Length: 117
Image 1 (cartoon, rainbow, N blue to C red):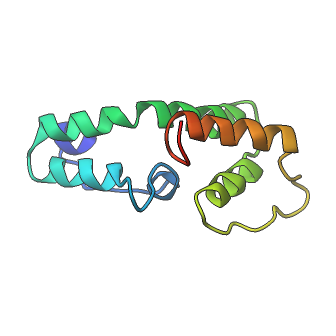
Image 2 (spheres, rainbow, N blue to C red; image 1 turned 45 degrees about the horizontal axis):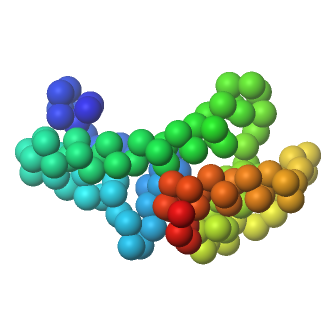
Image 3 (tube, helix red, strand yellow; image 1 turned 135 degrees about the vertical axis):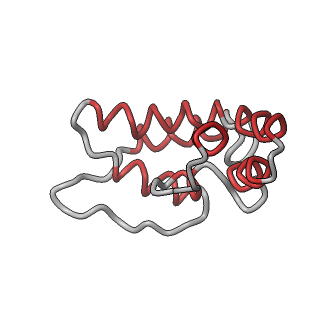
């Protein structure tokens, strides 16, 4: 929206490009290209398809940050599920529990980011 309405240059300083996409599903790249080409309707349609994935991201990252929690363990596990290597969290943070891992994996499957629904 900032690109389309306020002529803001593209600035991606969040982990969204590597967390909300996979090599087979490059929605952010696609809607950015549409927006830059002036194809607003197509850009908006692709952007809207990421709504469920963004809700999962809010659950695992934004909401913990608002509560004052560091979501790094969730971020590292999320990227691991996408096939990347994030490594272990550093002290004083703790790894994500097995219960939370299962919940996160289920959430990502339900929105089609990994595996199947």
